[in-house]
Every structure is written in C-alpha cells, then in structure tokens.
Image (tube, rainbow, N blue to C red):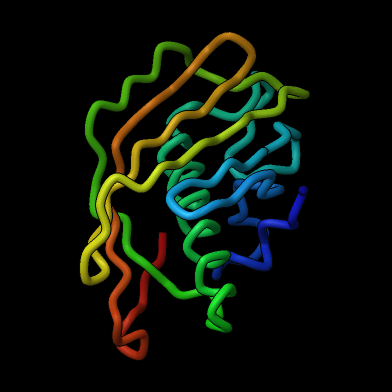
Length: 145
C-alpha cells in the first residue's frame, strides 16, 4: 500500500515533509520521504536533520488523519507539545535518499498522546518520543503539527 500522505494531513506545499503512508494499522504508521532539492529547508548537502521533529510530527498527523478517515472524519489540526530523547548524530539526510519513518502510539487519552518515533536512512536511525495534543474543539485552533 502506498497512500498519498497529503490527503491525511492539514498542511499544504511547501510545508509537506512526508510523501506516502506505506503502512497504517491501529497503533502505528510507517511513512516515506524522498530527499529532493524542492523540499523546504533543503540545502546543497541535503535536508538538515533538525527537520526530523517535523517529519515525525507530520507522520503522526498522517496517522491521525488516516484513523479519522476510518470513521468519516476530516484531518484535524493538532499541536506538537515537545520531544524527549532526540539525538541528531549526523547533520543532513543526503539528496536522493529515501527516509522510512515509523511512529508508534504509546499513549492517547482525551487528545493528549505520546508517540515513539524513528527515522531510518540507510543504516542510520534518529529516534525520539513526541508528545502531541489534538483538541476536541477544532474551532479554536490556530497551529498544527
């Protein structure tokens, strides 16, 4: 399965950092991103790894959007609250590489969630725990993850 991720997240170009959902099930999702010059923040060396937090957050957003679609709900806006245990052992994802991003729900209660996240690029892995919040009253939101 390769689903166009943009249909599941409430973002528009150029602020899209995942290309496809390749696997989605209750509790986790796997996405892909091809590193290419047209990506926002991309440099001659590739995409800086400091964008990893946004790549992970958008994968969580796509997971949430896919889950919502299963019950006929449109994608919702959410908030990235923070991250723990993120280390960036290299500076850039090289042009031409494809990232595989896996997010796994650890906790979800009344819109507050925590996800274990990994980005795989060749033999390198960047991992982190992300805390997110998706308000039940979508009419008061102005930011998204």
